[in-house]
Amino acid sequence: MYLNSPITQFEGFSLTTESNGEEVGTDRDSIELPQLTRTSLPLSNGDGGMYLAQRTNSLAIQKSEELQKTLMSHRHERHLVILQDFPDPDALSCAWAYQLIAQQYDIKCEIIYAGTLSHQENIALVKLTTLPAQRWTMQTLKSKDLSFYQGFVLIDNQGTTSGLITAVQQAGLPLVVLVDHHSLQGELKAEFVDVRPYVRATATIFTQYLQAGLLTLDSSISQHIKCATALMHGLRSDTNRLMQAQEEDFMAAAFLSKFYDAQLLNAILQANRSKRVMDVIERSLKNRIVQNNFSIAGVGYLRYDDRDAIPQAADFLVTEENVHTAVVYGIVHDEDDELEVVIGSLRTTKLTLDPDEFIKEAFGQDSTGRFFGGGRTGAGGFEIPMGFLSGSNENSAYAKMKWEVFDSQIKQKLLKLVSPKDNPIQS
Image (cartoon, rainbow, N blue to C red; front, side):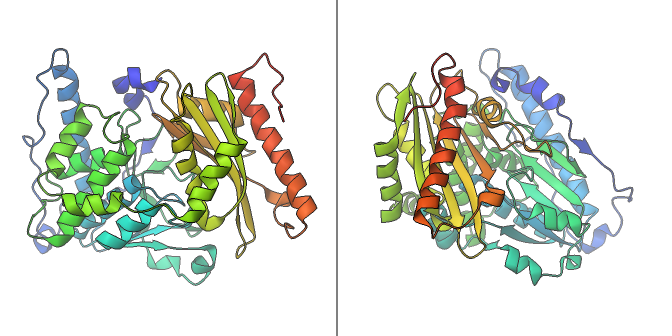
């Protein structure tokens, strides 16, 4: 697992950084640039932790300086900040932080995603903080002139979970910035790359940028308070309420604690589950099979807007006694776009199980070499397009037969790993 070798994992990844060949530093008088500091990141005093903390702080400042140079070379431009189709709090908060940082260089950013917000906490986060994220469907793309933008940015993803990537690449937009904490999904070329698979949350990386001086948070500015609150929520979410947090995550949380609004965060966390989400959780309980401490449940068909009920059902199933890993999946359909895709989520409390490796081994790759899923510490997900078999669900007999086939195939692939000696298909 990458958790045991953080430095080598980062130094060995195959993403490449390209220089745009422009001289940086001209026309500096037109914009007041933030001054980076080398003393704002605290060092660890723990036994054996000093060297790693120094390396971490040195890397954070190095990356902050590289990002500043990249932003300086793109002043006065317009960029698209692309999130995964179903963005989580980590992605949403970091995109907002990036937008605020880029504003200092007169770079106008639009935060976009192709899917939907269906998790009640994500809806509350965007609504209560007025977080400036926009949904761009395929229909929206048809009405957009992408030549209006000079580049795009990937935050908390590497392009494999967004339906917008193909369109921006076909429009010839260059990838300017890529910041993520997930395991490597493929080779991408960007002017600035900061991918750290050993970091628990992308919010930790962006908080380190703030600590290094890329943006000076001001408690008197409402937007800064709300963004700090969003970052705290993103950090808390991706570290399982800080229970899986490492030292640098706690350091980031300590920094954000000086700016975030605790009452606002509590209001976000108190958002109620919808009845449809509760119905999906009930379905997962009825349909689950438990084998070798794995709980596996198919929940049938879901509306596109209810997609986030699947990870919430997985969160619930993994709390069952004698279960360390839960996998929940269903067929998600969008009637407007006639889209169907198998979507699944994995949650685990087993320290020796790497969700990224497990999902990639279970479901493999498509014809282009793109993995159907991946993960991070304690969680993962997968998406399998149904292609030619999409639609025709008005025929109930056909819809039932189609679900049974996909349900059996997914169980077979999962149980080959869970119980390789047993008959994988069970009714």
